[in-house]
Length: 265
Image (tube, rainbow, N blue to C red; front, side, top):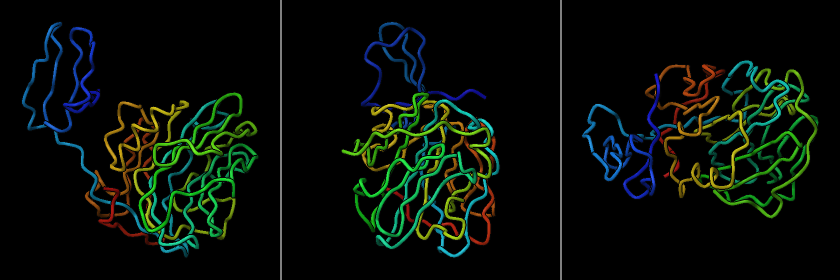
């Protein structure tokens, strides 16, 4: 089923085409441009976007098993984003595949943030993390030239661009949240929320949209390939994380990670 693109009452398009239609998240209305003015339709049946859950990992053996993201195999472009919270620099947060020529990103216990793409570790201690004991956001992008960029909390860091090798033919195999096979004995210790994979290279303005001043918003307009809301859409119960993207790659809570009500706000 097709989804309406979303706006707020303060970000309505200035010059829309006649017939353009949006769901306005702050007023819960469907708005339609008739060529000269917006027609507003009350839409109580369309739920407003909300974020009530994240997943907490204990750093021992817990992760979310997504399975194989075959769309990333030998991909020429991709983007990956997540929100995370760690109590100190000694904690580890990881997301990635099990392929040595795949993708991954992780905050390591020395306080550095690393990005793995192809067979390259392209970022490390040069990245200054925004802080600990707070929710942070990262967007990593990759393009066909092997250029990798990292955006933290909506802004490009001074060490934002690096070069990587090509993604391998099994780059999307064994994708996990809370565990990265580059360090097979290490697991996430902290909170992760709103993980997304895109088949395109997102822009700096897309990063600002995703960051949304520190409050996650509906990202369906960016057409995520995979979108795991870490409890939302699953009522914070059970062992399944439903994929809200186009890939239909549901995740399975493995070895007991738990839902948390601590979320970016």
